[in-house]
Length: 264
Image 1 (cartoon, rainbow, N blue to C red):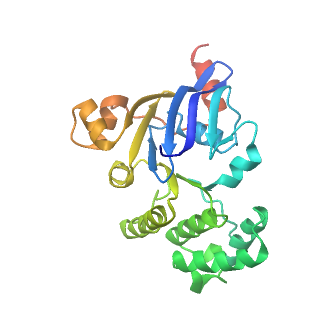
Image 2: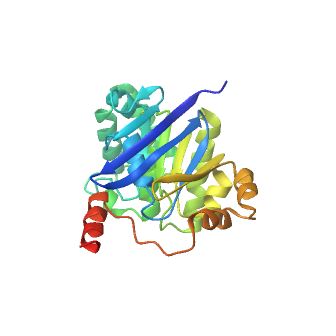
């Protein structure tokens, strides 16, 4: 039986009377690329924040690499790397300094840290720019550096939150080549959110779609197409989530305040 590297059971997050994530369950096998899709405000970001220990669940359980997200936070944090949707690099540091600082935070031994930084910066094509300030980098270069940084401590799971948002097709293609190579070579598990349906269809082994805090469909691409009687992931996505335009995802507390104002 293949090891489950992510296990989520009846996970719920409430903010006062707003249920942002509503009793969801799913699992991800070691070495899988798992796409977690949904419209704006569906609960994707809240779920990722719970899985990465940034938010405590209201109810339910979640494990990363066998560790409980609520009671074994340090072990969970050591088990994953993450590339956020918004840039999180220090623009006033060089590429090498950003990597080194991350390695120190994760207690990577100095000798290993140096070796891994060189290996990863070569891997993402940035070794020749290691001494350049990050503020001089293009968006694609910053994204590559963030991926290298997220892999420095050899995580079991890499969380990618809209990793290719705003990137040109060439850069997107190169980024996915890096990630797919790692997935194949090291059995790296990838948990992905994206609004690019064709991207998810190409790379994901399995897909879950969340809407209004609930998982409304999950399975392989062929299973989702069969369930929805459609011919593309985008059609399947629209079938289960509807075609109304959604507002940009907001902080759950902001959503709660908006709803209260609407009901006055």
